[in-house]
Image 1 (cartoon, rainbow, N blue to C red):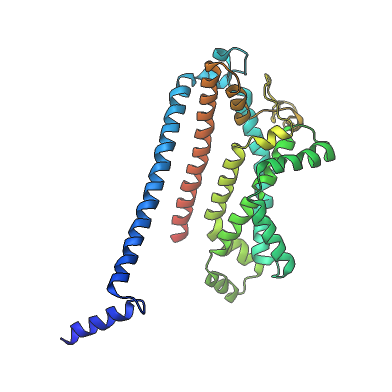
Image 2 (tube, rainbow, N blue to C red):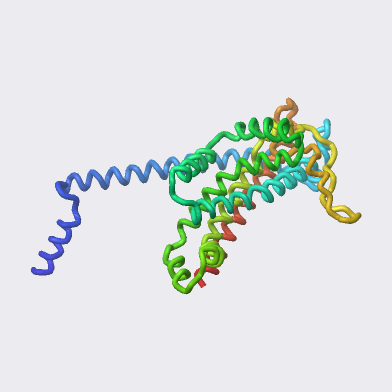
Length: 318
């Protein structure tokens, strides 16, 4: 009897004050309805995405071949390929990563670990968060005025890389700050307790613990840059190109060339847009095949982020 009375007291204490059994059942029913609505919405999205992917694969898979990857665009759909497009995408993303990743990670570390908390820091944080949601066409207009006409870099791979670096910079900064913020403060206190300096704590303790989240933000940002079209069209990317940029590596000393940075370019999204705008169904099949390649690259980058995050977290646990 005493045990049952104690359980009744505990149950009565855990109930919200002023709620009877009918109100509790009503809240539970509303919670179940909310879960059902969320599940239904998720299923609708997944089904629609499955149909779109099936339609894209049905049109594009027959066109995927070795010749499709090693041929230049052509006026004949059967002979057209994506050689210049995927090479341009790789070079543009390379420039984007070299410029955007170090700047974004360094800015995130400074804002989270070193910057003083004052009105200036608050303004910077608000602006960084807002820039992450700015439409990409705005970055294209900014790059057109700043890089193409202001600095004179022209409609080149360098301009495209700088533009996309600006685009992903807020994403990397936010991801870096959130990853560093998630590191327990006890790790910092333990390092300070044995005499480590601020730089040693950040370099040897905070960053290794935050690196899984940082890498995830970097790869997600690069995945977004890989699929961008509007800012590159704004700065003058070519829609039809039948040549490759100069190779970065040469056979002559010093074996590294930077002339490719100032060459014209195209990328996979623009090539797909060029084909889909044509009336022939054969060109639409080419666009679907280019879309499949772009989708595979994006999914591969996201899968790489998941694998790296999982392995690094397991290594930190050990």
